Length: 531
Ligand code: ACM
Image (tube, rainbow, N blue to C red; front, side, top):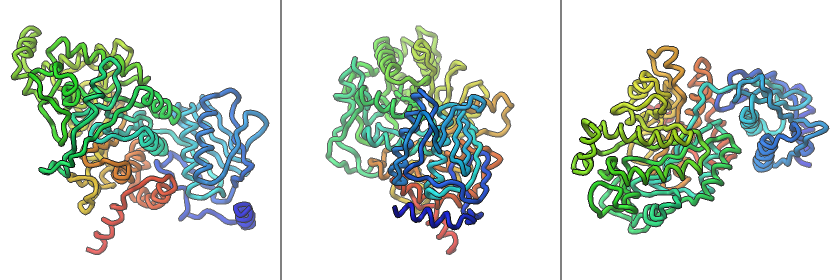
């Protein structure tokens, strides 16, 4: 009733306009927004969402939208497949696949997408408008489509474990930003987090560590056992949850390095002896899978085959980074293998190994993704490179004809603290909001064909110092919002000052969405002003 009276009062000021100070503040910035400035439409309890008949995917999209609006606007919208409705959702094949149009007029709201994903993105923009204006909406028209096909976020669940519910919340927050890939880092030296039925010790032993170092590898440990893993049923549930939000999950199974937890479970996968343990502190360790051993290769093949069955993603990430070569050098068996296969050094062995793994992945109809070290020693063209070191490595990947995802650590690792004065999330940094926003995704001096190989960008969160979702959200927001705008919005519209104006509004939206965020950006600004 109260809402109704407020609405009537507002309508009494039908001439009321939405001024320049109150233009739509959607993140990521849409391609084109025309705001007519007058009140056009008010959502009420009797507003209905009209869907095409028998479109199960769109129905689920609408149901998810209804749930979120019930929570965020305290308004229970109804869904219809016949008669009429005020919020009309349709798929329009004339539009590009992820594109959408959103029109708010006196007769209602039309959201058309090039696919169900496009409709979903239109609804995310609509959600942001509701967060900004409430239920009384201005007349406006949005035409929107992403700049890049790959818009990703990575979460390291090896160093710290996040529950299924926490992962779902993370996915919800990504979906709001029109992120379409969740790169799930599932295996690490400090914990193996994915159930593999054929090798139960991986989770029985590999998912548990005896304790965890305090701080930045200080001499002290907490003395508390720590562990956790996802069962295959849980993984399938999360895959479906993400798919309903148009996010593809790309699992990462690290090899040949970062293998301590797997070796603790199955010591014969290593090159030398026993005595492995799930690591309890942070760093890059010498423990690697023995790349020149038939039984190790067979193990990895079996693991990947189970992983591929669980994740419908076309892409499987096999790590490949920070592989210490010392063990391979010291292992007579490995050296013998290298001689037999005419591999001149350990880099050539790494390349041989990745080629082999690629064949396993390809045989199942999937494409391999690896960190940029997979370029060492050469790989075949259809591997996708994820550039985490300097952009030069990404450039090299593109120049050697690889589709490439840019997640260069200095611009895209959100475990770097946001400002010098922010100490909560770890020792490294800073990586300011502005630096994330300004990252140049397509490097200079590429040919047109090479530019097309730049698939997109990703924000990563490594969790050595991030044991809780509180800290995870604090680390990624608002920087994930900056990355989302960088990878979605057209380059010619990118405008840092305009983005900063929207950040305050975004903070209100984080509150509405129940997400934590860092105010380091404003605190840093204050300090700069006082100087
Ligand atoms: C990485 O940060 N080692 C991919």
